[in-house]
Picture 1 (tube, rainbow, N blue to C red):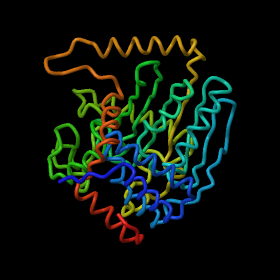
Picture 2: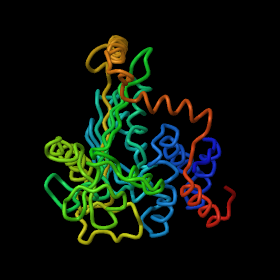
Picture 3: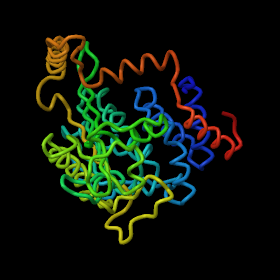
Picture 4: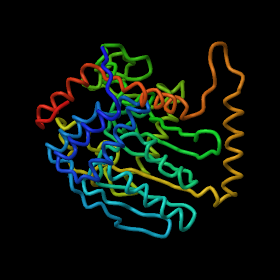
Length: 357
């Protein structure tokens, strides 16, 4: 059963929660806007459904509500940022802004981040570059829930990659995807709906295929994009590994099985190899390659031609970003549907902080 809430209702409630956690007003506003962008764009697994998770991490002392986010190393085109255990929802926009500023000066900017936390949907950060006629990139490592191809041990996170590319008359190209067959949040949604997981999403503790959405709680693992070796899971494994190295090995964050879990009830891995979670961001000026108006005109042509590709019966060819953009238009008008367990979570948060929901 679902219940609809307006974007304004949810963002207002979320801001209150972040403020009562001790976040400064500007951080609370930014964090709530980034979090609700996921719900607005139809990525329900990364929106307000995760709000209680951030609160529990704060209660466990793993999120600093007043971080001193700063650049600790830089060159004209690169930087490393220390997030000081802040909300990734705040740390990530800071780092992406640094990448954009460097790109404005020297053509491209690349920023790796350590000592951060879960940053919401990667696409929201990559899209920050669009207004400056830049191509934006964002990626992050995450809790180790993924078994590499042929493995039974969980070594990588869902490790998403996002790329946002500007166009002219057409909406931008925005690819935002996990390097696993499905993100962990999709499993959480299946658990709430009491549905089985499709084949190729997860495996049990012995490496056998499973359809149980609760299998991770029994020692199972998510599978890399592709599901199994015959369907290219080694490629998904490579993509996830690249994200882990760029985000964490490069910055000094925890990588691989040392990445801290999002859930507060699991202990931090012993003998950490870095600090917190890591992210990686990039911004490239289009006019570093050709005049921006020329490029964007050709992006329009690219998008129009691909959108008009001859399709199989009853289907149409989409451009990355189309489903999220269409969903955002609907939800900003008609409201955001929340499943009953999410509503229950939010009501419990309201009670905890003595505020209205």
